[in-house]
Image 1 (spheres, helix red, strand yellow):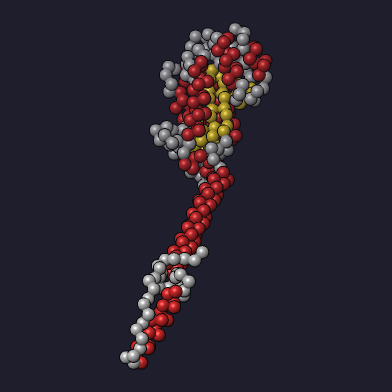
Image 2: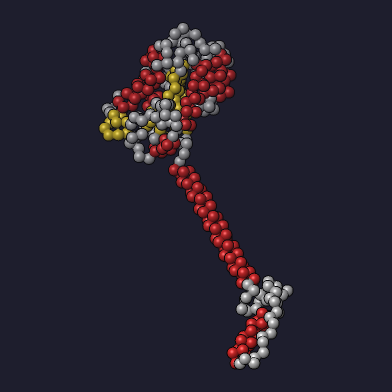
Length: 317
């Protein structure tokens, strides 16, 4: 084993996959023994063993102290790569590990998909992290216990399911055999129909590993765009409200001016005579004034003429 390095080591998703494949190839017998035990405890065991292996290679590799990364705080992930050493959340990798328990190969597909769906529930800054799901399964469902092969129908269904993902098969006779998504799909599915071929190669592969990488749920650029859109919407709304307020204010001012004009024109004592009929009020006032002046000049002044009654609010067309 390589001498452990000092200092912290940031692992990418690809580097983590390569280390897990390396550990799996070197520990097939231990994995078979753990898998053959009843119960589902070997998922915790494999997580602990992978941690020991990687930290033996990279002493200070950050595999995650904080595992509560989901909106449902009762759920935990298996690893958070670089959770403490990477200030940028986009350099973190949230990892889920799924192991097939004995007698549950038919359920493995659903269990693996549940992990993929679980990775859609990341919360907070972990939404910026890369996501990785890894699954371990046995092509011989009860191989370590009874030696019976899995049914041809089950093998065919498994081959069809795995065809969508990256996978690698391990054997004591061959180096790990890697298969890319959609690679050899027709041949593998047709061969899986044979009772003699419950596996994908020469009836020697019992242990398989499947993985799938998912993009982050969110990126900084998308968040900025959403924030800009929100701000623009708020600004537009504010501008619209301001324009509406200005328009309302203008209409109010115009209404006040019109009201004042109406009030002025309705005043029967309007000095410019615009509210009277044919200027008769002005003539009457002048007559009143002249009569007052004449009465001051002597007692012989003629009595003032009788005033015509005011007509009030009469307008000329």
